[in-house]
Length: 103
Image 1 (cartoon, rainbow, N blue to C red):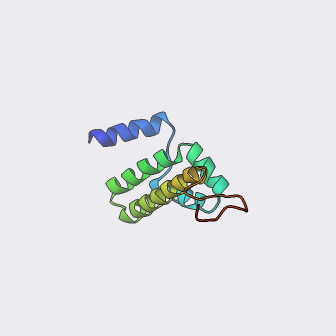
Image 2 (image 1 turned 90 degrees about the vertical axis):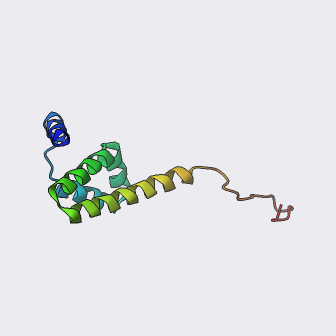
Image 3 (image 1 turned 45 degrees about the vertical axis):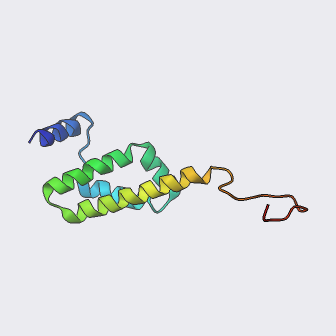
């Protein structure tokens, strides 16, 4: 009961009145475009999505909770891939033309 009260108070304090399904839908749609996904992440989207998943679980809406968890996992994979994209090298040898490639 305490967790429900905390979530209700947070919802009132942050004007977060979106239903869990609406939040999960928003997050799932954001995966379609990298700019939309970046805006969703910048707007505290993953945290809102976590709260929506928790609310769906409390409400017994297992379908929405499962979709939300899958979407969170996809967002995490995108963030990991983006972070790794900027690491130079990754074991790739960029040699001059006169050097053998196995070096």
